[in-house]
Length: 295
Image 1 (cartoon, rainbow, N blue to C red):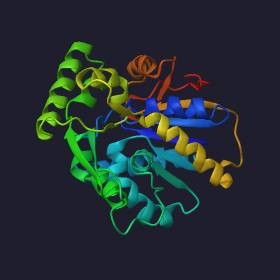
Image 2 (image 1 turned 180 degrees about the vertical axis):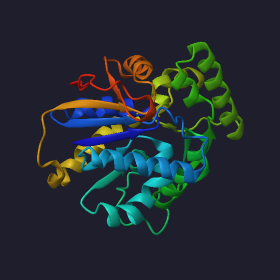
Image 3 (image 1 turned 60 degrees about the vertical axis):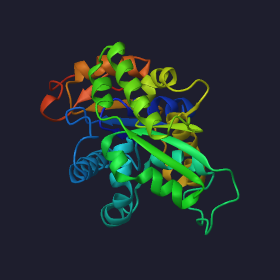
């Protein structure tokens, strides 16, 4: 079983793409809606919450967990992989959605030897829209810079956007906010349009059309869910040991929030009916039937 974790609804965009790409797999999605969004929390808070979520997914039987949250991946992935996993769960694996985006921009595999000098290529400008903590982590500029020094990365924090998406805010309100973020970024580029745009939060594909409206016409906006799905498919092909034993296909959904509200909004975001099982203080009543939903 493969686990996917996000602070809230954003990871459903990744789950949808992953489940479509791997229809014969079994998934467990965990949204920490009670603590969402993570983007305005401290790095220590994010790390603690992310580690607890991964531990919960491991306890449910997941052998591989995908951090389907850029904030969690940017602040905690490397630390969990290098310091915590080898000691506590050496037979388990954690991946993050940040890696496929960096690979797509640079054309350099994550584990490849890094270039020792700039490649003879045209300089490109990449725009990243992300949460405050993802921007503060500098994960995208640093990791892209290691692999492709000719790429200039400019970041724009969008501190309120994930919260509005989580709350199911009116589209008009989110449209105005997205436009302000785009205008702020374009002011810093002196009007030069970026060559490619990265939506560095898995919530943002839910309003990708609003970014497309606000940005100069024709700009490429990378699809993080599709990139994550292709990356995970390739990873499983390279690591067949992760797949055994195989389980019947399907998906379960867990939340720390109100399961009824989360199920309603989650179904809108996911594009299919999903039913979340509550865990923690807002858990569904005891004796409630299993809420597994096949995809």
